[in-house]
Image (cartoon, rainbow, N blue to C red; front, side):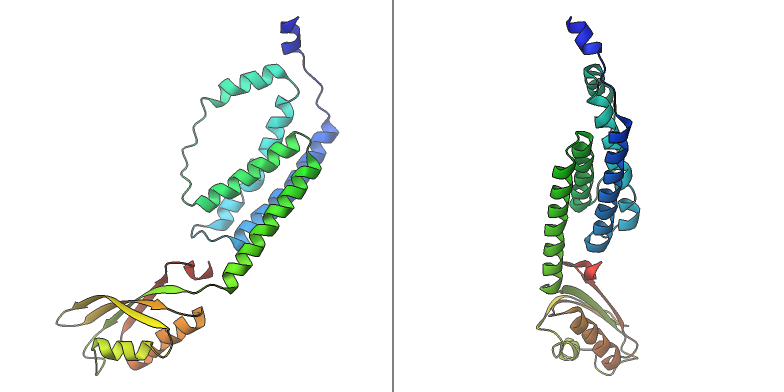
Length: 225
């Protein structure tokens, strides 16, 4: 009797599967858009987001098939034990979006449509509010590197560089200084109120020190990418 119960298979309603796949397509499309729009990873977010729909819909299909047969669910445990995910996830944020895509597939595959839709909307809404709040209240912290050649600038001292920076930033902290026969290289940690002030500081350096090379990187906010 137990063997008969295990081998028994319930029919998989194709209409329900199609509805779940359509809902999953809409939710994962919104998830992909959210990742591209509000994500903070430096990698190609569009390339990663394109895979979220595939992951979510595949999960819907797997759960829909497995729940119709106890034998398939037991066999799935052994089948998935040989699968190895070898592609590294470089950013924790990518892993969070990937888990949410899988969660959408699990919920729809279990026919929990309203719960899945409501939970996805709430999660993405909270992430959107957090992203907008951080973007409005952010304070860029920059590492700025200045390379000055004596033949192109009259004053190549650190005080001259600091004097050009201080009108545009709240603080300019010298972190590294390299002096050679041909040029001077200085690295500053800048505390700015906005990206516009950081760009104004760079423009001041370019005008005050003609021929100098200026580069900077935002260690905290990645310049809004």
